[in-house]
Length: 226
Image (cartoon, rainbow, N blue to C red; front, side, top):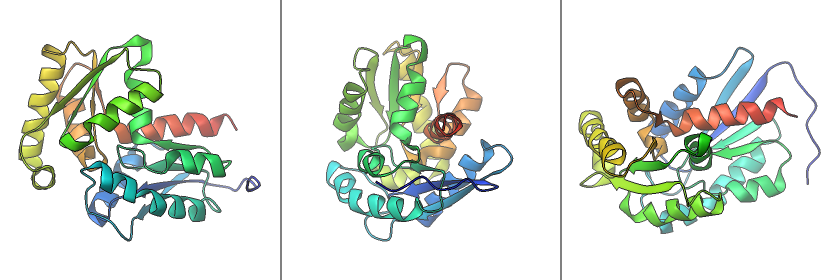
């Protein structure tokens, strides 16, 4: 295990995008920066191989080696790392090998959503990953609070590329989570859905959880403890 780095003047968070889309990387980094206090910077890294948007378990698993490689390399100059895909690929492997805090957007958002023993649900675009969400809730000891996942219709990649259609579809799914599934908080599940999540937070009075924000806030808290 590497030795802790000496403290420097400013503190740097590295955000890893396990997808190959540099546009998504820039969007997520921009969101992360809005929640950072003075003296913090964000360096964003994009996967060099893989897919532009992870939509199934095979793609999620295939992204792990790249995330781990990027994270181990970045740790030499980072104070904390965020894994920016909703399946948190490589999160546990990085934690096992690094002394700096590492968090993932799925884990962080579930932990925030469940504060106060709230019943929570997920609204997202990727039907083939739903089983992994339930597994994550189970691993975090939150199965008793997890109300399930509501999905948008149509191809997730095409939907993610059309902001207005994406917003309308996620708004409908989110309302169903609240109205039909009795969720007390709803997570917008996906790094590429970051802008949509922020918009829904502003439009709905009920608690909408934006995973990138959740990860930044959680990471800052963990960094303050060391």
